[in-house]
Image (cartoon, rainbow, N blue to C red; front, side, top):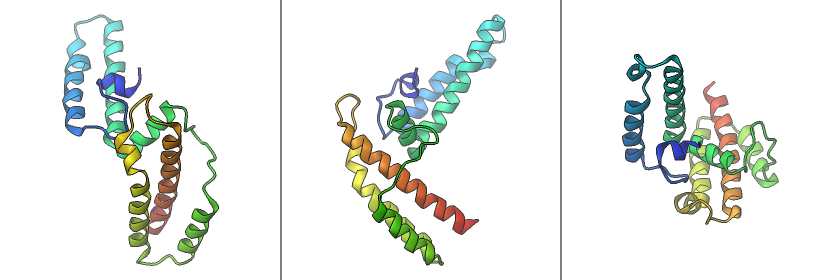
Length: 159
């Protein structure tokens, strides 16, 4: 069972936060281990496992970047430790940005992130499982890796 099914939510890049919270509390009432103290060891173990899965799912679905990663993995468009090749023009732009790191770099990166997001926002907002073209998922994958690259630069500046 995937996280969307667990929460009874439609598969998508944009998750309704209020519905997510409502479903979370509903699932915690149903599966929280404290409610299974009088049950068999097997039932307690299952409740603990399900409660843990609910917590992991919440963490992923609450975070837009993690939701993108999860959905791309779910659809087979993203593999763990994948060596994704970013476009050369993007890498050149990042090389120039890296060479001129200064106090303004974080602002530049924020602008780049907005620009990147604008390119995929319609795909993210309108994605429907089994009816959205794979080309859209490929664009989202590229966005994911570009944003990840930008985050590494920000982390280096802060570190």
